[in-house]
Image 1: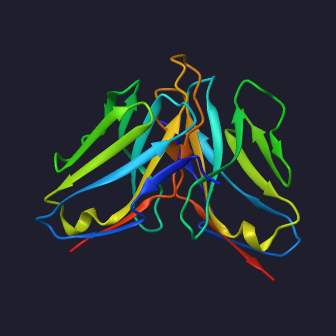
Image 2: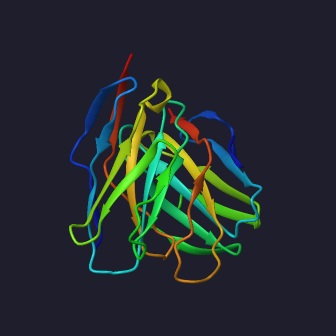
Length: 116
Length: 113
């Protein structure tokens, strides 16, 4: 069982649509992440939020807009996407105690996105 | 920059046998963490095992164990008594804080009944 949930499981959208992906964690973690994963490839980091503030943006195009309304929720707003943005989008969370210690990241089940 | 290399794109093993997945990494740091994640066809990334570099003892989790060779920068995963449910893509990952995981390219493991 996962304690990181993601909705929807699948999403099909046109290039002019606006949609949002949602991620929720119930582990009291203070760091949350968005990854993009293409088929047969490892996940690629997109964004990191730490204590509800954006701490890392891996030069992601502005058509992807993250939002962290509170410590348990993470959204990814999508607008004017391209077909090459079709991928599995994974959310993860970790404790983030603010030390040098790497906190283990726990992943959600992902949203499979298809852009037509 | 740190890199993680998984030299075996695909592996297969008979059910109930033992298989070892290889991983090497490159870093100049002495304090870091290594992980093995499993991603079955259901696509969720599941943490299998974690190793802290300052600990000499190899981590174990039930049928899963690692052979951590710090000097050689090697971090292999051994799966004992393989089960059909072990079939998945396995990713080795490195981290040294900064909230970034560096993943290898993955090894697809098939279990033959």
